[in-house]
Length: 394
Image 1 (cartoon, one colour):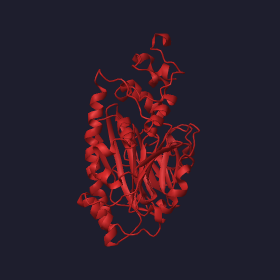
Image 2: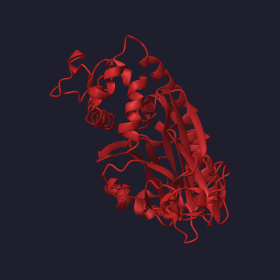
Image 3: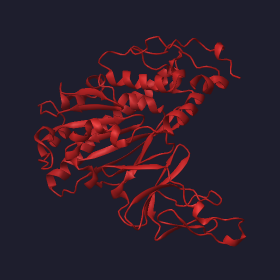
Image 4: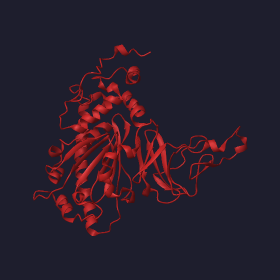
């Protein structure tokens, strides 16, 4: 039995709301294992957009923290998510990022064959299996939800709210963008980063660093940048304004961005960002949207998964605006890459434990409180012994 009394004191009445999470939770192996079980397996993960698999037999694979998944368009036009694992000997069924499997999924190991609805259609040597029930050996489906065209899966159903319920505070303002009608602009990009996933999400929702570290973004938004919290969603937004001192990408974007007829006047130039706990963010622009998904690999490794989507629009001005949007954000991403690497390195210093949070840092405060509520062990200033981590976090 774990000796809980040997751990550092964790006073549940202590007010930690004005403090960041302790540095050890950004690099500890045992805490990372606890996060996988308690944070990520019960959370909604974005698999793809329905437009990524437009035809029957089209599939898109997605591996998340050791769990292989595949989104597949059925003959009935429904998009389903399955574990990409054969029920016979656990072989991977579909390889590559995406493709078309025809009318069925055929296991490359022993030729077990499944319909596009996941039902087992053929098992060679079927009569040699004892008490074999073909209906009981269809592909396993995680809990799945389609929200505005985006396909989500939850690997462990903890009875928590749906994606629609989580995003409800912003459903009305997002409705005019017509996410479900959008199409991908290119393919998924995977960007590895040698940092903990929380350092990326912290940076994403950190409004105070923008005027200091992002000259281009700061000149784009001026004083209009705002942040707020609504349930499990953090929102950041700003309205681009023209200034003589702006770089040519910003000036060109503001010059060429055409009117988006589907958007209300107040959203014709608005840039807004929505981060859903724990690891998903939507960047919403007048010309396009994209998602950023922080995929944890290890305590100090993360892959940023992203792809843009947009409504069909062949106007030359819109093509120019989308290109300039990409140029602006490419610079921001490069700046953030250095920032989060420096923070990750600083987390390893014996001089740092946890830092104070300003009243203005409402998103960082909320994220830290959510983590402390879900995993009380991260209230501790130091990591407990490995053999006691799981017990204390219970």
